[in-house]
Amino acid sequence: MANEEINEEILSALEKRVDDLRNWFEQYFMGSRKRAPLQERTSVQYYIRRLSNINITNTRLRFRFQQIVAKFNAYNQHWNRTLQQIEAGTYFRDRFKANLRAQSDSMSEPGRTPPPPRGKEKGGISDDHIDEVYNAFVEARKQLNQSTNVSKDKLAESIRKQAPAIQEKYKGKQVRFKVVVEDGKAKLKATLK
Image (cartoon, rainbow, N blue to C red):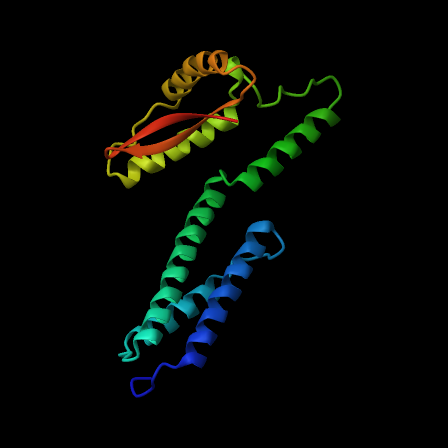
């Protein structure tokens, strides 16, 4: 491939392979594929590495190649993160299915009352929302190379203290929290729905 030149057809084929790979991963994450397309991903990575060794003199083609590689790298990070969540059992769709299965099992057992749903708690903030905020907060601190030793209970307590005051101030609005990075620090910010 050293004597070969990159042209529009090669880049179009590479872009199609990346898009097909994205579709296959989405099908796997939705449960319609049995296995993750890891071999196909490795094949695309190998192909990109081979193309990277070719000197591209045409600026337009070089830019297009770099865009395709950047797109693939972004997808790759997303796929790795989602695969880690699936392995850890924290992937949203898996958690949702597990909760449904647990509810149907507890309903079918005679004499057992179903567990209370994970929903609104004190201050109108759900446990699921606190989990999302905590995970985003830890991820933001990790990206900023800060300590990720954050207590989930303290974070939940802080959120539940702030929520009623904010709801009282803006009556009828639902309070949600998100993680923002300001001055190189991860912080919680309240938003209204």
